[in-house]
Image 1: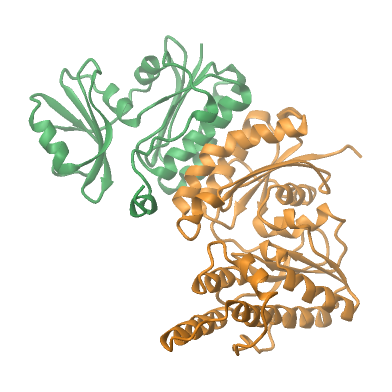
Image 2: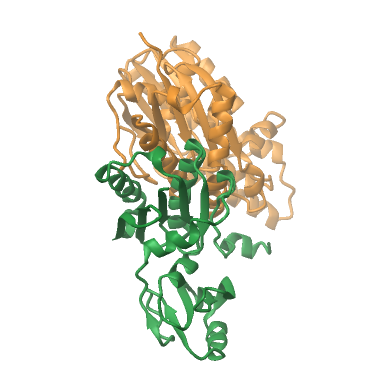
Length: 208
Length: 334
C-alpha cells in the first residue's frame, strides 16, 4: 500500500509518499509566497524521482487546517481533485494533530498556530494522543489559563509567540503522521473541505 | 483533422465553471455554479467567501460537466484555465485543479487570460473574422482591443479609473437597487427619460474611457436632491446615467473603427448583456457598415465555455504552460 501525504497549511510544503513499512520520499520546504506556484511541481517531482505513477497511490491523507486559509485550499484542492478523478480513497488530518503526533516526549502536547489579533489555533493532547481540548480558534489568554492547569506540557509551534514557555519547534515526523492516519475513515472527495475554525470577517460582521 | 476537445476551468470571481468545447467553436457541455445568492447579503462579492465556495464546488462541477458531456478525462485533449485577472484566492482553486488534472492525465495545460475568454465567447457563435475590434465591457474591464489574427491582442485603449460595470453597480447602490444592480439600471432606464444633466466623461483624442467622474456626478446629484428633500425619479436618473455611459463607449468605438480600418466589431464581457449598449452598437455598426457580433446572454457572464474556446486557439498558438503556472490578480492581455 502507498500513501500520499499533503500539508500546505503554512508557508511550508510538507509532503511525502510512504508504504506500510517506510517513508519512500518526502519534501519539507519553506515555499513562502510561492506555494501556489511550487507546491504541485514539488509533489510531482517526488513521483518522477521515484518512478511512481499517480494511480499507484492507495490513499491520500491531506491536512484540512487550521492555518493559512489560502494555503489550506491549495493542498485540499490538489488532494480532492486527485482523489475524485482517479477514485482514490482520501482522508484528512488536522494540522494541530499532525504537530502533536510528531512530538515524542512523555508530556501533554499543545500545538499552537498564530491566528493574529490575540488569537491562536490550538489543541491539547495527552501523550497517547487523547484529545483534551479540540482544535479551536482561541484567545491567547484563555489558552494560557487552560495550560496553567496541566503540569507537564510542551507547546509545539514554529511561530513567534513569546507569551508561551516550554516551546518545541515543529519538525513533522511524516512517517508517524502517515502511519497513524492511514486507517482513518475515508471521506467522499466532494466532502473534503478545509476546516478553517474561523468565520470570515464579513460573516462575523454580518452576525452569522 | 482530428477533433480537439478542450476542457475549460474558470473561477476568477464568484462562479465556479467547467466546460468542454470541441475545436474552439462547439460547446459540448458546460456547468456553472453561481454564488450570487451568497454574496447578495454583503452587497458585493466577498473574496474570502468566494474562495471558500470554489473549493467546496470544484470537484462537483468537474464531475457534472463530464457526466453531461458523456466523456471521461482521458478523452480530453488539453486543459485550459483562467490564470487571471481576477480575485487571487478564487483563481487559485481553478488553477490548482487544472494543474492537478494536467499532471494526473498528462494533458497540456493552457493558460487563458479572462478577457481572451470573453472575446472568444464570440467564436462559439461564429468563427472570428479579422481585423476586428473587441469592445470589452464588464465589472472589471473596459477595453478596446484590436486583433489582426487569432490570439494576437493589441490593446488600444482602456478605462483610466472604474470599469463600466463597476460604475453601474455603484450607481445602482446609490439609488437603492440591490446588488448586482447593473442589469437593474438597464431595465429601469427603459422606463425613464433623460431629464438629469450629467457630465460627458472623457472628451479627448485617445481611445481611453473614464467613469469615475460620471459616478461621482450621480452620487453628488442624489445627495443634493436628498438634502433638499426632493424625490429622485429613479427611472429618469437611470436613463440619464445610462445614456451618458453608453455614449462614452460608442464615441470611442466609432473613432477606433474609422481610424483603425476595422471591418468586424465584437462585444465581450458581462455588460454585453446590456440592452441599451447592444442597441447603440447595432446602429453604429449599421451606420459604419461593419459586422457586429454580440454573444448570446449565456456567454456574456463568466463561464468556462469561453475559456475552453479561447484555450483551443491559445493551444494552436503554442501557449502551453508548465505546472509552475501561477494565478495573477492583474495581468495585461497579450
